[in-house]
Image (cartoon, rainbow, N blue to C red; front, side, top):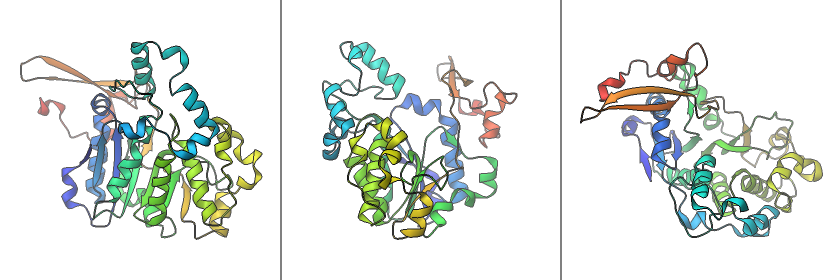
Length: 334
């Protein structure tokens, strides 16, 4: 399931590794230029590059964590499953819904699926940290990319790893005055250190439905409570996921602790919300594609569509240049 870029032989021992995940080969090939961009940056930065291919293992997909069972979100999940009632009776509709929502692209299971492939990155990150020459791991979505500034100065993408105060950094769009725990799982950095490993273990153990943010918040707050940064008594798991995101700190003042306050008053808790500017991530619609044609061994023309972040702009034809792949001739791989 986990694959490592062959160019990693030149990686620096102890350097952070890069990790991406995909649940299907179709999604991988749609984003193939972005994977090549990450691999090229890994070579420039002395990083090993890992790719997890495959769906969430069944033992994790079909069960929820003990804390989830007692949560408000978990109780709804166990009653209703991950799919809404109107789609449960039609296998084709279930498959379509799973594809559209990135649930499970190929799995046909008679068992109820409770957790989505969003959780794949957690066991994948733990596996990468087990590598003897990896000092930490950066996870980023496969449709992200490193820009020209990153290649000119790779250290721009290494800030959390170089910050000796931080063992785990999670993506946020919020300022340092906002609650430290209200972060997202779309990008993170985990050092090979006790806190990072505990957080990853808690996160997957508390898996609880389609989105992975709900158990992430619970895990971060549990660790912060254990470190003495605040008092946490499972308040997040007493709310539905959307309610917790919007009103968690307001309805539970004990949780209204800013990132700035945690850094100042609880330095032993080596966690930080972080705005990951690199790799760059932009949402791209399903119809925003660039097409490349080649001839297969039988002489037939094959057209491959890849996600094009520049579609609709004056530079729509410059995708490979922006990804640092302008010197690559797609025809050479026919």
